[in-house]
Each structure stands twice: as C-alpha cells, then as structure tokens.
Image 1 (tube, rainbow, N blue to C red):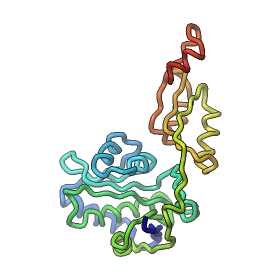
Image 2 (image 1 turned 135 degrees about the vertical axis):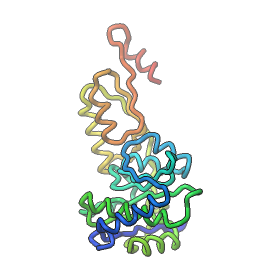
Image 3 (image 1 turned 180 degrees about the vertical axis):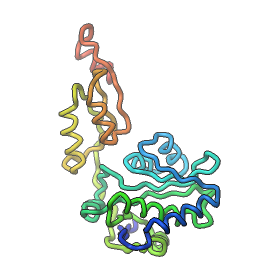
Image 4 (image 1 turned 45 degrees about the vertical axis):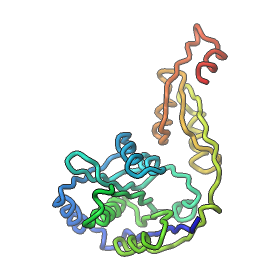
Length: 245
C-alpha cells in the first residue's frame, strides 16, 4: 500500500475571509445548489454510504457537515472538526493545539464539474476558521493529484507522510451494557478517546428505560444505542443475558 500524506492549511490566510466565502457560496447558488450545515444526521450518513462507500459516514457522524443539495437531492458534502476519531495517523498533527480536521469531502459522480469541489473546500476551511481553528489538517490524502488539488485550492502543504501498514492497529469491536447514569460507561468512553484501549465501541445496550447512559453514548458518537429492559421482578439475570445474546 502506498504512503499517504497529512496536509495542513493555514486558516489565518486571507484566502478564508468571509467575502471570498460569500463569493464561493454565490457561485454554488448560481448552479442551483443550496448549502446547509448538518450534524448527527442519519439520512446524510446513509447517503454517504451509498454514494461513496467506505468508512466516511462514521467520520461524518462525528463532524459538522456542509452539504450541497439541488432539488432536494444531496450532491456533495464536506465534514469538519471531527471529534473522537482514533486513527493512528492523527496522533501527531491532529493533536496540535488549534488544529481542526478537514474531510472527508465528496462530490457525487454526476456533479463533478465546474469547480463545485473547490468552492465547497473553500467554504469548509472558512467554517473551520469561524469555529476558532488556526490550522486545518487534511489527513491521509492518497496520491499526488489530490495533493496538488489541495495545494492549488487551499494552499495546503504536506507535513507528514504515513505508511498505513505501519500505523494500522487491529481493534476489537465490542458491545457494552450499561445502566443508571452511565458513570462507568463514561470512564470507558474516555479511555477509548485517549487511545488507552484498542477497541471499537460498536454499540451500547442499556437495561433501564431511564438510563442516562444512553445519552452519554450518543454524545460520544456511538452509532447504535438500544434499550433492552431488564424485568427484574420477573426475570433472572441469566435469563436476561440469554435474551441479549
């Protein structure tokens, strides 16, 4: 597998002032495209899975997203300021103060013309600047053509080359069960976010209808949170565990 590159954009540049962003927005609107910002949007993530495949929807769910639509149909998106990502190649540049994650960015195949991607990228970096970031990290860029695109459009520069095979770490996919206010679950979520535990929390099951643990899980970006109530008065723990499994 070829090396990938981490790129950085200086968001303090005059290229990302509001007037230039307004011009980019007007160009998009002239093409019949509307711009909106979405967060934790399951419908958006489902569209990303269909249009682009891969793992982009998981990153989008943890991000702010600028979405381009025409006639009610999504055409493009860019994810910004993702939280809670645990990719090894984010450990260095991604941990630096004032750095916001840019990407992924995708334009549907039928809309890849006329500079839509460039204008959306400009809007994305301007939004990161508005959020208070000084640097944008574009992680794991694959190939010289993409590197040249980001250099031309955003003034990006390569700061780190990464070998995906060297950085790759297998992670166990686990399901956690929680009850009550979720203090133990929160400790687990915090340890995962600090890369102290090599696991991927795929789902959380709570055993009480009023369990605050469910909200903690959703706030941390866990995609699947289910309530399977334990009927303590009439059901043994062994029976409940068997029902879960």
